[in-house]
Length: 327
Image: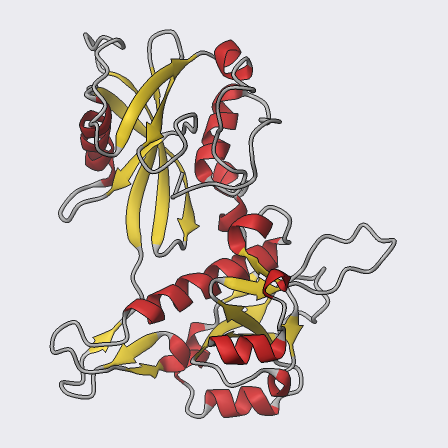
């Protein structure tokens, strides 16, 4: 089930060959900028420009990919790879670059801030190629933003390998992009109800699956059992992996699991931690459907939404497209 489930997740889709061997080619960006066929994704504050909609058509939104010489000077450039999409406006094999822009450069390119679209609002409407491209670019842009200096000596690092690592000028140490693993879990009881929690940072009627980061030296399965106990006070067992989705807000990958209550564990022994999780509720399928007017569920770009819909056996037709946090 894992691969078929993952293929449905909005941010797990892709149609780009990341072409890692080309990253280390000397003078690569000079070569790319001299090639009229190169296309550039302009990224500003986590958002991109969308191609103008053609009136009278039902075309899905797509990222506006620019010719290199039309792009203002970037703070960071990253070689993303080659397009594999046969249905895209650009030919298969087109080389793709992300250009991370500062405020002045971005607004010189497009002065209307409303024209720049964040990933969460367009993830479900973009093609496989564009959704994966945006996710890749955003994850790398966020990493560069938070790793400008060497973690060992504090010296300012330089960008190397076409944007895929940074180099310390003092000791020559390399810093590579990082991704923080987290688990997100559907807990069921003996009546096949699911457990949803309300986070302290959300509206008090927003509910989602329980989740948490994997700690050093910990397996995914151990993290599932620990996090569920810490957030709900419940003992769970039999973690079953469903699939994963990158979540570059700023640098996570979400591993989806199902678990069941451990034998002898009462579903009524709920104990929210009171700091992160303020409320916990069990929902049957009928109760969830009947809650349309009273609760807010995860947005359509999240893995939480997909896991809940898989358990429900049908799409959820209510709730917003937005999602807060990783859920």
